[in-house]
Image (cartoon, rainbow, N blue to C red; front, side, top):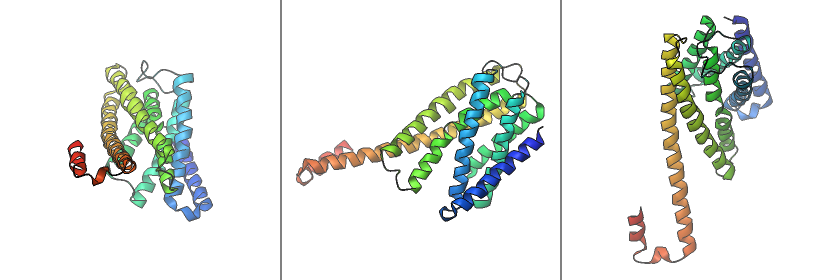
Length: 248
């Protein structure tokens, strides 16, 4: 296991956090932590994209194969970040049990792939699929913090996030999960880990679907209210309220 690489990664992300804390002292620690998360998301997506689409091998056909040097490096960079982020979340009590379970499962999966020397191929695929939506999630938080979330830009970020999550983490992730389960090279413990990670993806998907429904319904209700106001007099008609209740 590349202990030195993981340690350097942990130290690097921690130093970046301290730099952000010093630079944005007036914004608070979560602002700095989310900047680190955003930086990690961009870096690891680019790194694992190169591993998957350029260097190879393809995770759908080579699940369970021996780790390459670049795959190992990618896992070390990501593992160091997850150690940092888990410690930060526990220290500041910012996340619930589901997110903490996701962090713990991610750490366990990367540790197993590094310790056994195999399955980094599909693990990098899981990391790519999981982190590709992360910059959008952080953008949503920053827009809300800056008071610009309730805008066309905020709607576009939410729509792209939900679409990517459903298509990549649930859709493509489901096919990768199937390939991992059916691969004769993948060990049983990695298959069981895949079951846990995909189950967590569905837990998140259900929460995201509920959020999407609530936001869409709220926007529709506001649109109907604005349309009724522009219509003029409809609300004063004796049948106006009853008609609205029937449509609801």
